[in-house]
Image 1 (cartoon, rainbow, N blue to C red):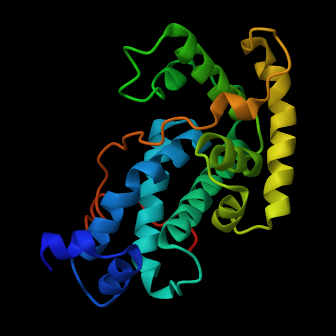
Image 2 (image 1 turned 120 degrees about the horizontal axis):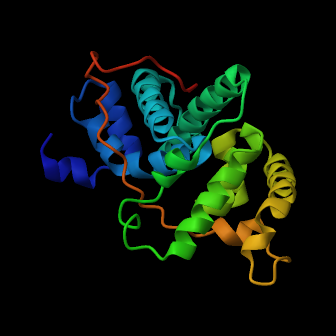
Length: 229
């Protein structure tokens, strides 16, 4: 398949071609969606290495489970669901083995988007670090819901499809998460109060660049499937 044919195909068509043995189709799907998957993973896990591993796990899982896709949701929703599941698996494992508070100062400093890291106003950088630090205090399920709805800008109905839960559950997780975040973030508002955490993170840039990861065929670099299709 030539580049023009690949570029003009829909996600569903590409996934079907991948299942039929097209060697280039899945790579195009990865090219289209990896940045957004990376942004979700990074904000959910708060750690670049863990996020990169989660995205790679998810892409490997998607590559292997493509034949199970039935078109009941968009391909991008399916990919995000696998990625979020991979993140939640890692977050739960990290929580179970954490025995003492982790100093996230250096780690959180690295989470600024590359295009912001040097030029961003100090206030924006401080707010970003505070928000990420506060997110790390939430249970993984609440964190994932807030990342999708308040930071990535997903409608609640779409986030529900990604998380594979009812819309009411997403609303409840977001409400509980915001309530827990508000005391931690209210000092960032000029008045010191009255600012919802959802207004802090909403509509942030979605184009966070993902570092290069091995493709699904690079078996030497694959660390195993972490997402659930």
